[in-house]
Image (cartoon, rainbow, N blue to C red; front, side, top):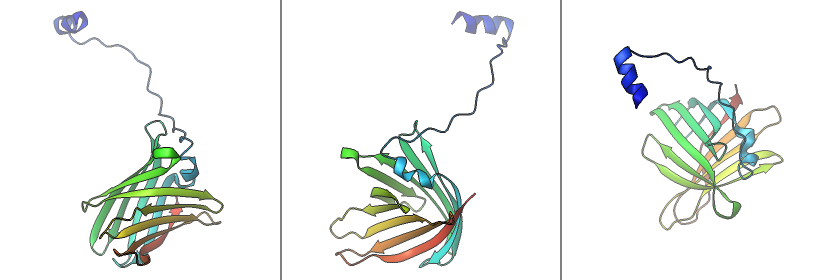
Length: 170
């Protein structure tokens, strides 16, 4: 308080401080490490029911590696699409993901990843009268990533591809 009063009386004081170091990329928690193959910035293109699309998405750790955040922006014939998905540890070692987009959709996923081949799958739980969604990633030997989003109508019918494409890491 005295410093604040003193600064008012004598003008601002300058205190030299060392420059801030760039924040280190957090290491993922054990539950999220199987998803690390997704980390980075990816350029994607594909198509499906909404038509051709192209965009960019990133997977970056946050909150000291306790969450993995995917941010996605794409352009389709219907317009610009933005979404955010947060992967986080759930109960009993499970991984969950919460998805939000600029169209007002909120989707809760159960998530799992495999190491050979590197792949990840996000699937919604069954709910009476509601469609189900599945988002999957498969890392190819050439470093590209296959991405597929599928929808199953209410009532247990099988998943059908809505959108799929290929992504390349920058």
